[in-house]
Image (cartoon, rainbow, N blue to C red):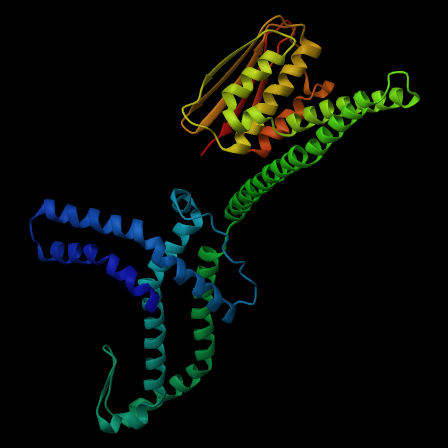
Length: 393
């Protein structure tokens, strides 16, 4: 109850308003101000007061109800915190705890006092009459029936207390128990947060692998290629070893080229150094189909969003070259209101179907992991449009 006192302080403008209305003070503008001020205080700060109160009440609920109450799984504090229904149910419970619960236990206390006075009335009458409002007891003989009724009613005291506690517990469980919708929402929020952490860890691991290959294996392979080249220069052309050294030298150069492509596939250097527009233009230059790139990015998106966008476009262009028969592709990337939208449109034959193994399902999964969504439009005669929307906030 002590934790509910701040809630009562927040409602002080309403109490002052009620007093002014009862007194008949005619200042509508000031009374409207009190009404709005009380509403703003209770709605804005009330949930913050009700939150610790509800946590304590969930613990106290175990005294009268053996069924466990799962802890409230909340969304992070912010606008969504106020949109959670549990927040307002906790506030409603706090309001009841300030208003109705004292009245309930006051009635119980009054009933207990009445039963006690009736049971002890023969011994209390000599000290003065007992006035119940409609009944006045002045003699001990008059008090005997009431004493018998009071003593008999003592048996009902445990049931009365249990009934009051049970009613209080039922109201608390109904308002403080997280509903299935709240639990599902909290689980989805936690899944989104864990997914974001996994995406960040995946990108960090991707960068580490790319760095290790670039600074470690590739440099050693470059050194080996140079040494084989020097050895080949020192050997006579007709020497039996020259052919084997030349073959090893060519294989080392081929392996270095493949390793460079592998490193580029893990995370292109141009994407890291120059950003997404330059990386998309590089993809366009490497594409077998003519590609027009249009970008409108006021700032650099997060790294994992950049990487996701790049690989979506790269895979889409590969699919266009393999399956569409298109002659022109347009790639558009723009950011509006913290949402990065990339579109890949081609003038091919259309009819793209994720079930045909064209990699579209993988694209959709990659976009979903980044918290976005992918849309596909590909009628039988074309054109085909792939649209990916990725949050950048």
